[in-house]
Structures are given as C-alpha cells and as structure tokens.
Image 1 (cartoon, protein in one colour):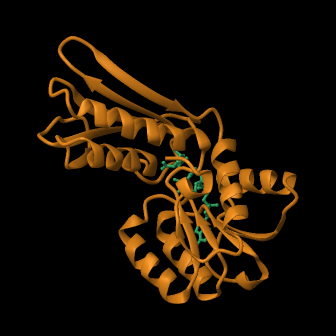
Image 2 (cartoon, helix red, strand yellow):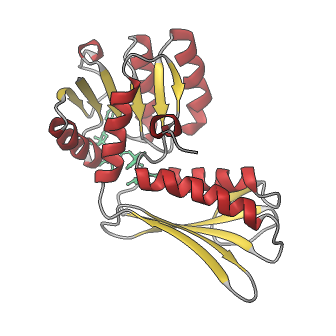
Length: 234
Ligand SMILES: NC(=O)C1=CN([C@@H]2O[C@H](COP(=O)(O)OP(=O)(O)OC[C@H]3O[C@@H](n4cnc5c(N)ncnc54)[C@H](O)[C@@H]3O)[C@@H](O)[C@H]2O)C=CC1
Ligand SMILES: O=C(O)C1=N[C@H](C(=O)O)C[C@H](O)C1
C-alpha cells in the first residue's frame, strides 16, 4: 500500500519504520500543507499539529483518499470534518490514541467508571504526563478517558484542566517531563483508600503500529470509523 505521511516528526518517523517493515511504501512525507499530490497515495496518515490537521484531513476527503488521524488538539472542528467526510463519501478514522494497550485501557476505564458510579464516597481525578514538546493539554487520550467516565458515571458531567475538585467535574492534571512518551493514571480516592489504574507507554511504537493497522483496515471502505471497529473490541 502507498502511504502519505502528513506530518514527519516523532510519530511520522516511527510510522515510516513500521510501515516499511510491514511491506508498505511511503510515497509522501510532508511537514507542510502544500507541495504534494495526495492522489499518489492509497491512504494518508496524519500526525501533524493541531492547526494543520483539519486542512490535511479535508484535503484527503476531497481527493477520495482514506485518512487516519492521530493528531490531537483540533477536535473543535471534528464535527465539521465528519460532515465533509460524509458529503465527499470519504473514509476516516480519528483516535486520540492508536495503541492496543490504551484501547484496552479505555474499555477498563469505562467498566471501572460504571462500578464506581454506585459508590458515592469515591472521587475521581486524572493525571497525564508527556514530553515537554507536546503542544496541547490535557492530552487527547485524557479527554477520551474523561468522556468515557462521563458516559458511565452519573456524578460527572464535565472535565477541567487543573487539580481543583469541583462538583460534577473531573480534574485533569497535565505534567510535562522530558522524554516521557505518554502516561495516564485515573484515581478514585476516598477517605479510606484509593483505587488507581495506569497506562504507561514505554515508546511510540504501539501508537505507530496501531495507526498502520488502521490504515491497512480502512482501505476500500467508506465512512467514519473508530479504533474499536478496527480492533473489534468493546
Ligand atoms: N493518536 C495517537 O496515538 C498519538 C497522537 N499523537 C499526536 O500526534 C501529533 C504529532 O505528534 P509528534 O509526531 O510527537 O509531533 P512532532 O512535533 O514530532 O511532529 C509533528 C510534525 O508535523 C509537522 N507539521 C507542521 N505543520 C504541518 C502541516 N501543515 N502538514 C503536515 N505536517 C505539519 C511539523 O513540522 C512536525 O514535523 C500530536 O498532535 C500528538 O498529540 C502522538 C502520539 C500518539
Ligand atoms: O503528544 C503525544 O506524544 C501523545 N499524544 C496523544 C495524546 O494527546 O493523547 C497520545 C499519546 O499519549 C502521545
């Protein structure tokens, strides 16, 4: 399969290695929004920057090139992108985190939130830790985890960045530490004890492998999908 890498930074380079190992060809590597012909690719993988993702994704829809996006921090425009995808009969998967481990962690988070919803003495909080180059906070993964809790737990209706605990709000602390690929922890604390679940990425290979698997899966399909569909979990 011929792949366009829209964004050739830390993730683009890791995806390139894994894609080549799996027998694919990289036909476009770009760190720019123009100067390339997207129709040369069978599929595009966008890991760019928050203010470039929407343009990159829509450009793929307009040329009927299926697109996988892992870029975070652009989701204010997500619904607009979905509408254009449907109009253009495009194919699209966005995931805040493509790793198999985190997608299992998402399911575990939903299950735990459902159980904890019956126990009023526990309050939830979240911490995410990433490298110092990260542009957005909280991480896309932390937002997905918070949305999972809000869906399953009757006491929570929103989230906010910071550690202040307010009614019905999940506090998310974002820490930036050199070279950390991505750590997410959820705590349910009470007067007597704390229950915690943590996912720790040791490197970027899990994210990259998931994105390549999603690109292989979407070829020949039309519509908007999620990583759940690709992995057949949940
Ligand atoms: N969903 C997931 O599993 C994961 C998502 N991410 C997200 O992916 C994104 C990229 O992460 P990294 O590779 O670590 O960042 P990075 O900063 O190393 O790479 C981003 C690249 O995008 C380039 N770029 C800037 N404008 C562009 C444009 N208009 N078109 C194409 N490329 C452009 C930059 O020059 C840079 O090389 C971030 O939003 C990050 O949060 C990162 C890891 C996993
Ligand atoms: O920027 C990163 O590095 C990561 N971003 C994603 C996010 O915002 O959740 C996924 C992963 O945690 C690494």
